[in-house]
Image (tube, rainbow, N blue to C red):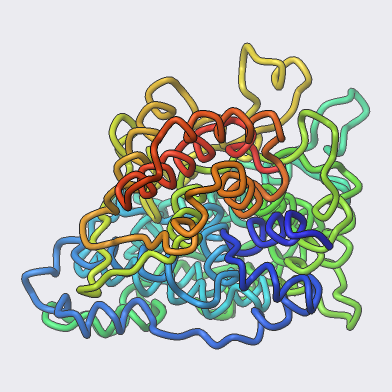
Length: 504
């Protein structure tokens, strides 16, 4: 295993590669690194951090104070980098967002949601789906919280929002799939829908009667509890979830169990969710064979267990398509702006001397990243998993490339300008350290080669490295300021080049 191969693996599995990380992976192997990461405990929860830092006061009941801070804190510095990478991926599949969360203690709702993802991201998909469904944040975001049973006198019917999205986005998708993620077709060559409007209407009745458990206007602690069912608001009577009957005798929790059991057992879930996890970690347009291998482990982890997220993640990251650089120009993925920024922060050991991690909302596409954690513009994430860039070679070849939905003239320029400031000065109280890089500043080619390996994982060509090396060599390294300028210019140029931005 080369340094570049180790760095490439670490970028897929945990954002960034320090020299120590590379040495560990080379010494112990990919699987051992993953096992060590799986074994790390969840620590320093977001909810607890917000309480400890004074955000659990009435003044913050109706804002997101502290939420951005704690999200950046763990994304940039937590030792369980695999967990943080997977949690970010899951937050872009099971989406809630600060962009649409009109509820009390909304910052704590975000904190509790991400704490929940951290606690369940290596466990059972079925347990994760239950926790997502009953989380207070999701309850408000997709209108399951406070959803009332039908009323024949007024014509009121249950809200169908969560019923629709839990099928379309969180479990089975719109169309029936083969085990390799390809579409099943009917006799006329048309895709076969997985559910009907009648299915949505019936499932919506399952998601009635759910509400906060012991709401308090003065203490956000109730946010840590899942929603509870209020029997008087629940739609009684027989129901059907896809082809499974829910008896009239089933109360709210019993009906929910049958509904989620049915969705989690559907044959679509493995290829549908598995493909999206591949997209978030490794490749935008994975082959059907790759999806099929992941779906097979999803169906049975080798011990008869279905929906084992840890086994699926390990399969994704150790698969031959993940561990081999393809010559296919459509292989790999465009790194999300968030991933690039987090990689920079972790690569250069950013710290927050005052402990506040005051980076804030980076959603502005003209001046910042055009993307910020848990701030998707809608439940459909920052980009769609099936997005194919129009009027492009990728479009001509029908290659899915979701992250390109964020890529335009404004975001490209905004990213570079933002990174120029971040690399040079840090962001507010968040500062990088370039000690190791400054020691190489006198050797422009050596500096660039070291950075290219750690940042690009073997994807940045010798030609591009030579171009960057020639450019930074024009900057004098005779003083400390000159050395710093060289290092910062090298990092910026490498992180701006297309060969870096596309993770192969």
